[in-house]
Length: 198
Image (cartoon, rainbow, N blue to C red):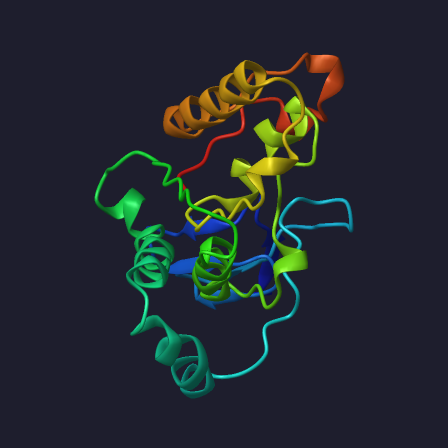
């Protein structure tokens, strides 16, 4: 009758939608005596969510109040709220790009959406300053969640190379699975292709 606990391999839905694993805590409970814990992580992980603070009431008074003045912020919040529903509705991942002049509010809208899953400041958001391999790993860290990637201007290379990097990322996200790595390059329990919905 001893209780049992195990760490989830990744964030997202478990137990037939009975519980949702976040990077720092679990919402809901698995049936039976088994307890599921958040994934074991370290500081190098892509999903670097800080411990959540605040309340729904405070969020509505700050982010929610700002949203009523911007359709872009509303779209970002709706995308964040829709992400956990993709698996339930049997839909694929999708990507939304926002484009506009500097100071048009693109990063503010992205941060508003990201606040739904716990990000509190722009410097915490994943961005495009990374290798091709790192960009391929990010979606798996946001399984069943909103994936906010900031600052497309950080992509290196020519316009054609940046376009190709974005196309690869977009199609990779829509494919819902990453590349299979060499068996020697992965730990024994994690040799399958990483999968996600985001």
